[in-house]
Length: 301
Image 1 (cartoon, helix red, strand yellow):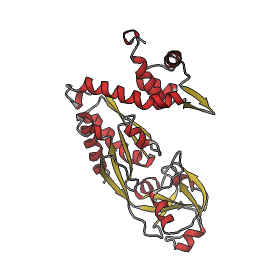
Image 2 (cartoon, helix red, strand yellow):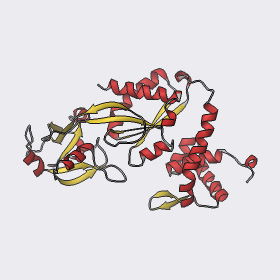
Image 3 (cartoon, one colour):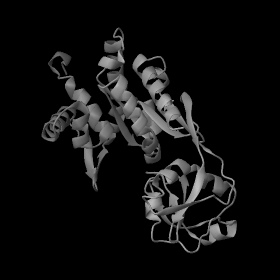
Image 4 (tube, helix red, strand yellow):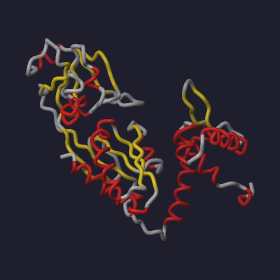
């Protein structure tokens, strides 16, 4: 293939498609409409003589060739981006870009407002894209498919990190739950039905779940959710109990018609950390954004 006759923008679109696995979101990522991105995917399929993305159920999955291309393509495009940015100064007030952050809904709930406030004041052209934290987030960080990941410190990785904040766990029940008073004994806690947390994709539990499992505590789990923010609302009208981060529980107690009760076990505080690709440690935009995230974490108290 003659490179001079090849539209290199197709590779940018291909990168977006392989990351998002969704035509509409990939189009949004590169500024193309859904029909335009569909046309681009058709051209890419013709060029590579491969479907690249195939529908499996309700989702698009990568073909074996696409899986092979994805990390190579990301690395090559990142090299081009680094080359173009090598001599460019970073001025927050005039910067036009989007930073992607993988985080749980609980972290987004706490950090979104202070972060947006800082962006509005210092860098109105900078946008934030929060993406779902799952077991593949660290891999995407290594591929430069996302800029940052925020996750519990007990999930050890080889990436550089900075501590953000600590959080205590509390029990939450529906305010009308007559089986629970102001406190919970261990026996009462184990007798109640439980709403537990399950991480997307692999079903990994929360830090509290992990600790209880290590203590040998067997709960009567009757339901799971992938959302910490929904948990206080989901126990409403039931006898279920759930473990929630204290800041979230306090913020949603009234709206969820919930009641907060100290946990009957001595649960270690959850420590959230900010991770980034080591290639980005000295990159001025990333360094500046890290400072904003750390400052926003201090703002939540």
